[in-house]
Length: 245
Ligand code: PGA
Image 1 (cartoon, rainbow, N blue to C red):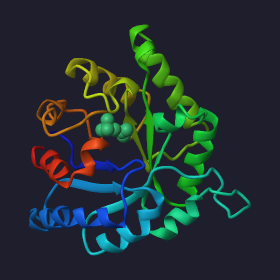
Image 2: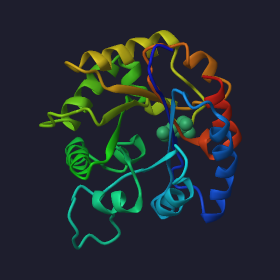
Image 3: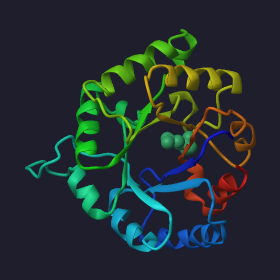
């Protein structure tokens, strides 16, 4: 790995209860024993109900907490069921995932994603901005044009991009056990970075990352980290992934 830091972001999706926080004990212990000069950064993104309890639990550790989504409005307002970026920050979140394909499939548009990113940046949250093509788009050789469009629209009128991480998550790789071929992944990450001028953003890969395929994935030297769904719900698997890099 040529990167200064490797990021490991756990996306718990709609899983987890107060009881599941106990599973973090192993993770905390593991990172306590980790050398001080570790070049890994760990972020847990639980469901909103667990952000604050998790934040309290992880307070004295280097592990940080993030959210999985947010409302586009930074202010308080009459939006039943929604949580804004100010609230997430207040609950202890330092990061927020925005534009995940599971939300895009639910109707989240590029325009809405752009508003959410702006709101998160204003609230001083770091953004994990998800992009990626569907299987049909991949088959039609549209990967580059789709991700270009998603980057352009999602980051419209955002000048300062230093707090934005890009998570390349091909939709067909999420939860399927299938990961892209190393060559393809290397090229796509390179393509994503080529879309930026000046300081390049951190680009993470997400989609079926597990302890078995991490050995291959870590060889792709332009990847700055991983967004891990299913495997992050098991502290053993998550630790295994981090250990192997
Ligand atoms: P997965 O999910 O690791 O279960 O494929 C990744 C994600 O959706 O962020």
